[in-house]
Length: 75
Image (cartoon, rainbow, N blue to C red; front, top):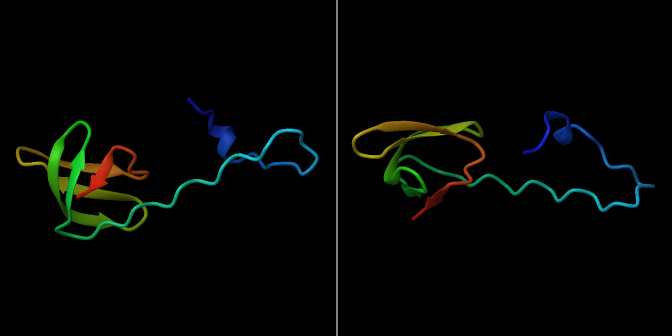
């Protein structure tokens, strides 16, 4: 688990360690996209909160999934 300060630390040019890799870009979802989630299974995007979260209908439940969408994949 990363510490909260790890995201705010800057890399010094004189450091012997390599800089941390850049964060991968967020995947863009639009309403009505079909998606799959590692925990909830197949679903359909109902709403998109730009850069923040998506709301997905997984059949018996609607779930708000915050960014980054590591366990969510577009079909």
